Amino acid sequence: MDILQARKLSDDSLQAIVIAESQRCLPASKTEIEEALAVLAAAYPRPKGTDAELQARKRIYVEALADLPPRRLKSGIMGALHNCKFFPSIAEIREHAALADFEKITIDLSHSRLAVARREIERRAQITDQRKDTQ
Image (cartoon, rainbow, N blue to C red; front, side, top):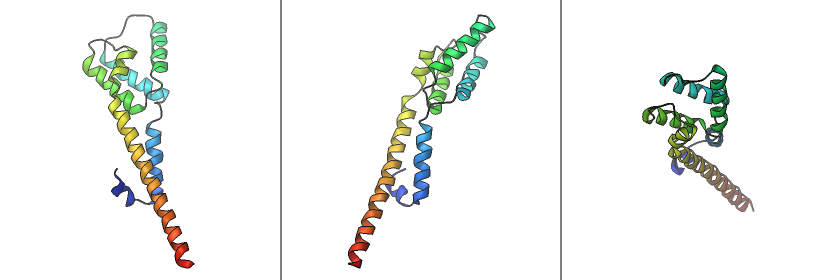
C-alpha cells in the first residue's frame, strides 16, 4: 500500500491494517508448525526409528521452527518440497524460508505505520489551523 492509497482510507481502516500486518510478523503457532511438518511427512517416505524417536524428532523440529512467521514457514516447507530429495533438515527448511516474504511484510508494515503517522500529522495541522482561525 502506498501513501496515496492510505490517504483514502479511514483511520479505523489504517489501524486495522497496522494490526493485521503486525500479527503477520508473529511466529507460527505450534499447530501451524505441526501441520506444515505433516505435509512434509506425507511427501517423504517414513524415516527409520521407533515411534518415540519420531515423536522426539517432531518436538525438536517444532521447537527449532517456532520463531518463523507462518508465511516464512510455508515458504520453507514449499522450498524443501521442491528441492530436497530426502526429508529436509531444520537447517534446510530455514534456508528455504524465504527472507523476501518477511522483508515484504516488514516493508508493508512500515508503509502502513507511515500512513498512520502522516494522517496524524495532517490531523494535528488541521487542528492548529482551526485554532488560528478562531483567534
